[in-house]
Every structure is written in structure tokens, then in C-alpha cells.
Image (tube, rainbow, N blue to C red; front, side, top):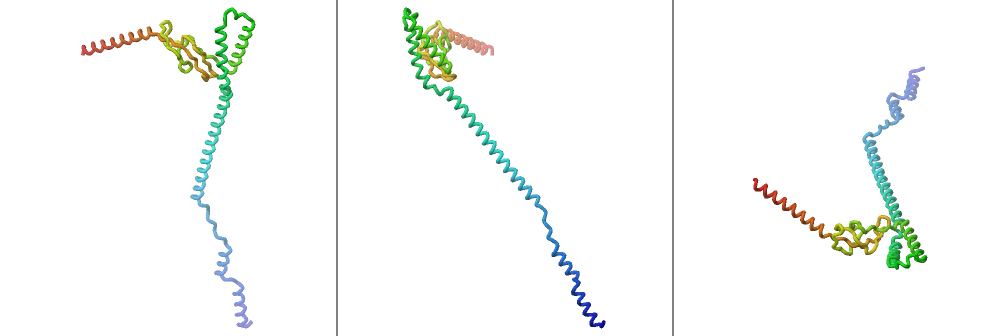
Length: 222
């Protein structure tokens, strides 16, 4: 093989075998770029954001649940009040009927009280009142009770030293309650005991006089 032939073979080999630089370039091209790790700060911020959002929704849910519970309680109370007092207007219209029955029996002559038809009317009156009582109607107590402005209406203050001051001594018109609500206050006469007030005034005057004397004695001692 001549020198010329050797030179050609060497050139062919160099062309077929890549250089180190080309190998490095090929390696860099084949190697994928390194992926960056997750940003911890960004993740922490996102977690805090989602946590606040969850707390907000939880608070809104609690408020809604409380509002719903309050609504249910209000509806239940309104329903209960309606069942108790829904017929109040009817009871109010029946009160004059009870008043008329009371007056009729009070003015009934004694000679007629034992007649069968009178006893029949009395029985009807008792049955009517029993039915009304079962529905929550009850009479307000008056005679002998202390005057109570929440259930009594004073139509007259009568000077009477035989009763304690402020005691109900007569009933002009009966009063009624429907369950725990006043349907109509009782119209009453209230005793005005002047003797008790006089005694109280004397006692207060004596106490004031005694206090004045003690004050004067104390001033003289000083």
C-alpha cells in the first residue's frame, strides 16, 4: 500500500469516528434539562389560602345552621301559640254569654230554684263552663285577694277599715284568662283602709322624731 492509499484510509477513519467535542455535544443534546424542585414558599401560601377559605365556609355553615335552628324554634313557638290562643276571639265573644248566665242565676227567685227546667239550665251552664275550662279558659280570682294590676281593674276605691288596704272586696265583672294570658281583666272594688295609713303615718312620724332627737343629742355631746 502506497503512502497515498494510507492517507486516504486515515481520512476515511477520521470521518467515520466522531471527535470528543462532537460526542460531548451529542451527550448534552440527549440529556434532558433538569427539572426544578417545587417552590416550598408557594406551596405554603397556597395551603394557608385554602385553610382560610375552609374556615370561612365552615363559619358560614355554622351561621346558616344557627339561623335555621332559630327559624325552627320560632315556627314551633308560633304554632304552639296559635294552638293555645287561636280561638281567643271566639272565647272573647262567649264571655258576655257567661256574664248573662251569671246575672240570670243571681237574680233568680228562690221559689224557682228547685224547678226542673231551672236545674236543667244550671246543668247546661256547668257543662259549658267545663268545656271552656278544658280549652284553657279560667276565671281570675278576686274576692279576698290583694289587688293585682296585671289581672285586676279597679273601678272603685272604697274606704273600709274592716279590710286590709289594697284588698279586693267586691267583683263588678268577672275576669278570665286563656292559659297564661289575660283575656279580660276582672273589674273590682278595692278597699282603702285609712286607719292603717294613719297608724303608719304616726309610726313614721315617731321614727322621724326619735331620729331627730338622737341627732340633737349627738350634736350636743360633740
